Image (tube, rainbow, N blue to C red; front, side, top):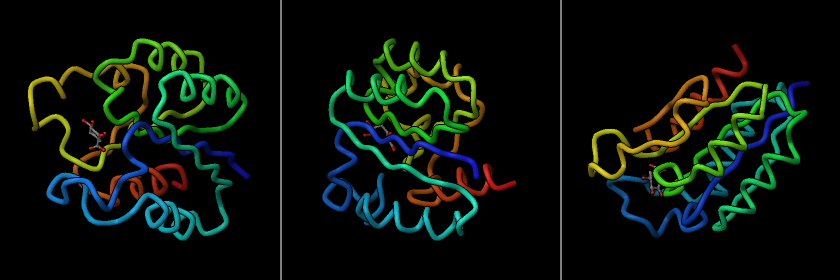
Length: 139
Ligand code: DQA
């Protein structure tokens, strides 16, 4: 079975309390449950969230043998050379995910350090972006 790391960055532990127009109304636990349902026993999902850049980097380093990473780096998308470099080492499938339409928001959110090292990006569909990532891996 494909082993998949689902990695979420800063403030995503606060989903449910963040602006709904951008991020929808579900909590991260609820989104994780939907992903498990969608995976339907075909993927082994491991979930990890951190508000700290170094934790996310270390988690990627410890998961280099996994088949895929689904990552929403959140604000670190726009700042983190360290996450870019860690993802660059990972040879499996890398999927960038965002709840919001990250490319159509403020100019600073168009700066993206992870896009170039990911295979595909799903964004702008709230929790549906994560579900699309699962579907992509199942296909
Ligand atoms: C986000 C978009 C980022 O710009 C923002 O900092 C987030 C969440 C998204 O899922 O839409 O925290 O990655």
